Length: 339
Image 1 (cartoon, rainbow, N blue to C red):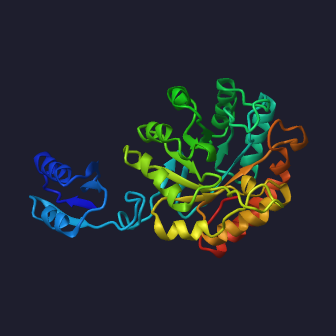
Image 2: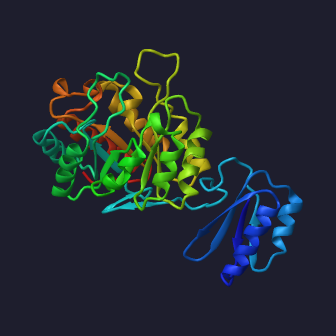
Image 3: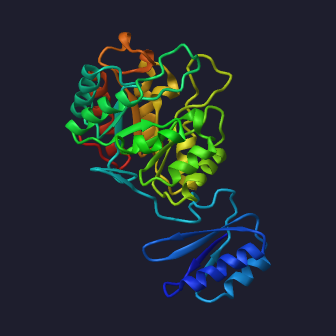
């Protein structure tokens, strides 16, 4: 349940609510807002206990939450969250059009890519420096050297930089370079990592795990939210099914479902969702039509030379063409994209 305090509530009042929740056998979490303070109470709460909460001093409202995820639920917050990163607002009227290389490889490649993103109307740069790979013999990324290259390219065009964090011990270092911490599919249920980024001041892009349900995705976001970081962006990137024609099965159902059940912004990654260059554009447009707040696209100046995921990367001209199509689709659904 969610206990909403009155504006006049004191710290003593809040402590009484926390104490009562603990007495009832639950774990309370205090969230301080601009206008209101709320106490999120985890666990199944019976009606009698909710009734007792209503009697406490300066309690404005007690909201029962029927879902296992509470802070991510629209029951907790009806208005959609907007995540501001530099000049980009994810979840606003303008779509997020974030693109870049799967991995930073060398300076020329990252600079070319960033220029292509700007030319296509992109408003965010993505790129990997630490790469989780299925095979230990595959390219693992350049590490901090890659972050230096990506930041240089992003800063040149004042683009917010999105990059994946794989280990808690990298957090302090990555906070020096990136604007958004990405949690990849393989780490969606790395709970210690989720808690760590939940305590960061940077926004978090949380990708759905390869075999994760939507409830599991939202519960993963709950780990971040309960630590105080409210700037969470969800990402549908395809799931593993019995189908082998594509790299993953892009779950178009996920986008409207999430938009109906959570206040968090939702973007789509059709590059990983399909694994095929020629399928990226149609799935990207379908995602926008379904209500996605933006796209995460992989590009490379020379995909045939890419050290990772070349088959799913668009070329710069293809990204420009996609940008024009996304701009047209955005108008259809009442959104916008400047190209």
